[in-house]
Amino acid sequence: MLKWAVELGLFDLEYMPRTAIKGQALADFLLEFDFAVNDKALVMLRRPHTEEVLEELPHPWWILHVDGAVNNGGAGACIVLVSLEDHHLMSAIHFKFYATNNDAEYEALINGLKIALEMGVRNLIMKSDSELVVNQVNGGFQARGPRTELYLRCTQRLIVKFKEVRLECVPREKNSNADALEKMG
Image (tube, rainbow, N blue to C red; front, side, top):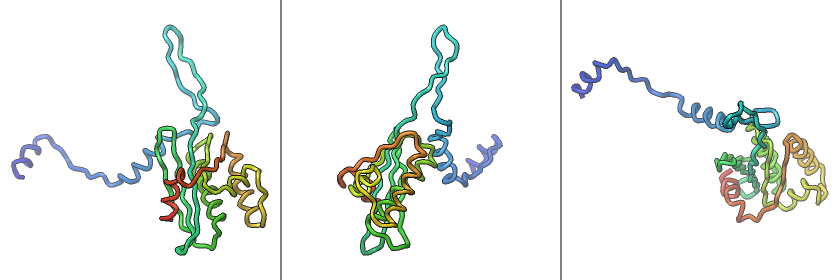
């Protein structure tokens, strides 16, 4: 050990530990998904024998998997936001309030929409295994009850903030990532 200290001492090296790896990882993640440009992404292209040209590209489509459930341990929800590059941003939530199964599904959807807005997502495909919630949001079913109407209005207020949104009902087997995390929440 002493031999290494003598040899490396000639180069005036100083050891400095990295203390903020977690914070740096989050900052790198947010920079990687920076879609803060107003409505369109701009890319600089160089073409042979021409000047630089700005070309507008459409925003990529992100996929949001949501699931909520109630069991003996309480209520929970799961959100999995998937980028075009197949990066998964996962969140599991445990509710400290009484909720029905449909309430948990709406909470998952609302929180997923909020996360997508924070990430700067403009085009979103939402996938849920709750046929009732999907049909209520898409306008096929009527919302009954004051609590359900509040959830529906809140969801609709968030949806209009996106450029394009699609909500699809998927079988539970195709929503397995969200389903597994929801049980943790």
